[in-house]
Image 1 (cartoon, helix red, strand yellow):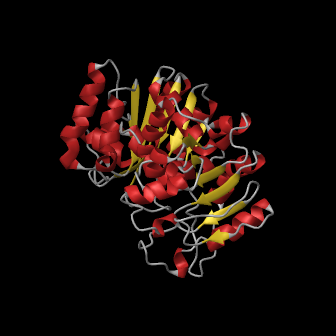
Image 2: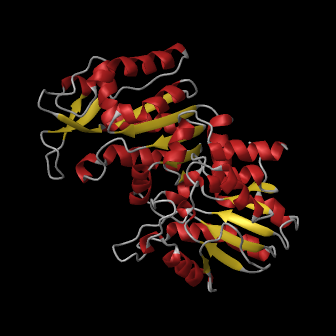
Image 3: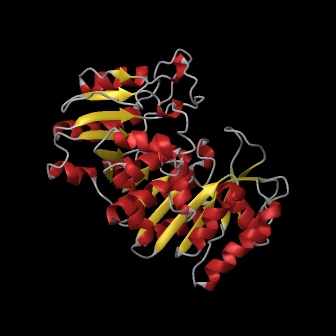
Length: 397
């Protein structure tokens, strides 16, 4: 992907003395008293902000927080706690500016936070008049909020259209690079793991990947649906019987390309869905009518691990079993360990995937971990994200 990198602008001196508008993702969780309970996103935004300050820019940063009603400010919508926490982490005061759309006073070397951008009327609909006003505030726009990259809003898309220069911050650039490496020009074989409770929530992803990957590993309730489509009994396991034709279509599409969707040959079953339920390993052909399939078995885990070890690129979305219960976590752990040990370029995303990566302590062995949520999933569906689209347009002139 061709886009302007903010890091390059800073390194070349082009940001010195310029007004820089950073759209960050500071949408952090808060408790009932608006105290921040987890500050990872604030910490992640600091390199971009510090880069701008070190370059001698006048820096404005904004973000959305929660789901405010446009034009109807409530104290709970305020970025004030975020500004305080950012100030603590950067060891400097970070003034919070309200009613900023018509003008902001900030000097080179200064940093201000602009109040919740979703309070501005027209933000979510990408109102052109608002977008032009935002663009007029800056010389350089920096998009560094991948989690919003799938939304065409005034502070993410419109401002990029009209700002003198539109660039990608280090967080967004890293996502764009990783996604391009994994999907646009992957090292083969390309293996994708798509797991979760329902085929319906991942169907468009499965269809898109079936046209590109060399192997499509399914897990969780999704695997149960594929097992059912392959003619296997899955007992009372979670599945979507109304999507059997869709599952068969994905398998047929893979087969037509000489690729495959490996169906589990053994599974781990229980009679009830509980952490203390006795776990029994069974052949996939021997599942009883009252069984719940809660994990893949050791034979299947070993076969899939071998595929992952031979892969050139791995895309991982979702654990393959109920990994929260120790008795049904072995499959997900085996997959995780194989990804960690593989020489393949690995890209992982999705909330449950991140939890599994943390549980098995393999963060440093996964090449790129996406925190983009919906944006990450939309890319896997084959969609072009608005943020990527406009930044590439602006880079092309």
